[in-house]
Image (tube, rainbow, N blue to C red; front, side, top):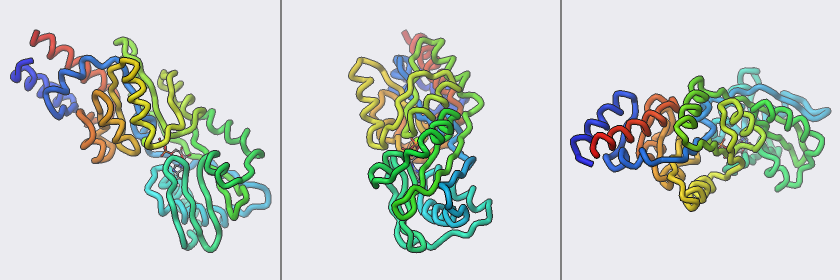
Length: 292
Ligand code: ADP
Ligand code: MG
């Protein structure tokens, strides 16, 4: 590859909002055969909205939401922000937080107004020995609709659940179809549960989904694909996926994501549109053909 043609290729890519960190990435990008996309903030806008509040019998909504809102206000997770916003819109004042702990990949644990509050996944509830069998079918129904449902326990008892919905980006389905038409395998990876992941995957035409991956497990999943001989591009927004962006043959950061993503990645897709993935691969192939 001559430096001049690579520079020309990079310049053309920049016009499409695709920033390559160096010439070697432009060359490698043309060889990608597998694209792993993060769900939240990559396939979806990453701006979830609180849609459902369901409470256990004899539980007062204002009391529970005041505790949950206070606990989640301490968390920087986009899910937490959605929950807090939804609660504040209901004009509920938040309790006082005495203790807070984020449990990455699972949820949060806090003491609010003297009460023990836990919000998060089934597995988190299982860890604390909370009986949730009555709510499982309701939770599954929400998840089949692509929502993320989070369980609430107060003082060791199941108290209710909150669900949020995140919208799929308008361009994601077309972008996935373009990659598939190019013979590239598309896989979606998420820390979210299997059912929600399958529902969102179905919306964009991705049937291969790796769900319930813990934050530290995402890079491992990329390594597994590489061990199978695949040339992997990882596309993410940097929340929980920076190590996977570094591990992949090519890391692509979503420009609307975090600074961490752009630091970890080889390519930044400024527009946040997944069409940038196919554009980058096609441009790379073309540049390399012109050189040979
Ligand atoms: P994602 O890959 O979608 O960013 P995470 O790995 O961060 O997901 O989290 C996995 C799951 O843990 C979430 O789908 C949610 O059920 C639960 N969770 C994470 N953070 C919180 C939180 N602040 N409050 C409640 N539940 C949470
Ligand atoms: Mg994420």
